[in-house]
Length: 510
Image (tube, rainbow, N blue to C red; front, top):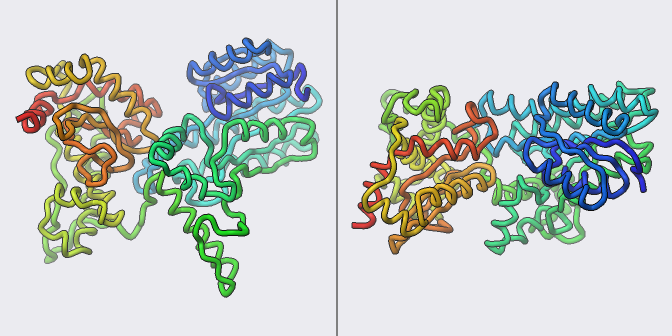
């Protein structure tokens, strides 16, 4: 076995690639410190010990220096030193485009995804060097290699990890400590599970397969095996490298499964550009539409006709929803994000005379025939207006009357409704919304939609009349809750305006 009695740390080991790697390290004789911010660390450690291996769990924030130092100290105290550091912890930061990414969001993504690996190298390398030799493996991403495979914040952080591996390998010259990075492509982890689940439910798994010549996404174990190789003596002459483990999406296939026409008259660059553009379009089926800078617009200049849609004012002060939603979040969410959706919706309407004079509900009812500019921004315009009206200052309200009766009838209790709603919202991959709707029969249901879609759209997977909705895009809660979306969802119920929800239900119930 390659890691007999080796002392190993795996961060982000509570699930996905980290858990798979921890289990494999232990199966090959390694003594593993299982580090994660969640209770998944305890679960992974239990799986290892249950199988006869050696493991200790520790809860950490991988982007905090004191936590990294504490983790390394645990390994040295428990196992007599440190041989391998697998700095795998990371966060997605959602799929916000360039203009929806605020400083707080990108700062947090960089703190965990880039500063975390930096701290791991800084503090682990001296301890590993004391053992005579060893390895550090970082988890980067294909998003750090090519644009379009991730959000700006995530891509920038992972590009930094790739360069960090190379620079660190160079600066550790003579220490016999190797530093390498793995660059996963689309992998079925907890972060991406909703993508795969949706694809299976919608019979669209072939679209996942079309992203690379192997016609599938990866499993965590496939990435973990590459990490183990880089950490082992089998890779004793591999140093400062970033290994893409992505199924080869940019490899030229013998046939053309992605439907890209090959033309011998085109230059290699042109072929590559067309192939990559196709890859982006396929990716956007799951991850939302990439922002088009050309769609940015503001209020019309003096003398121009008024816009078809105007930004609705907030129905309360910016600080009215504190402490659940802070004043700063409300300001940029309404004045920047909602304003941008409004302006870009108007630009889309101006481009199509057939939309002139139509209400936003009319447009949503024919959204399947509209371009992304109208779909994304029309949804964003309506969703946010609905969202503001769904909330009110914290007042301990609860549903009553016919609405309360309907909730008890269809969910069993208000607590059961909240539980189902929170689960659906927390499980919505990337950016999107969670909804309570009334279907055509009047039955109450919980659903969710990606990006700025909503249940009023004519191609909605679960159509109905929205009664309440919560925005689970990270810009809606990040300043207060960071990446704790479940915490935000739980707190949000304190500011639901049940009077408004009851009025909406009364219109449906008649």
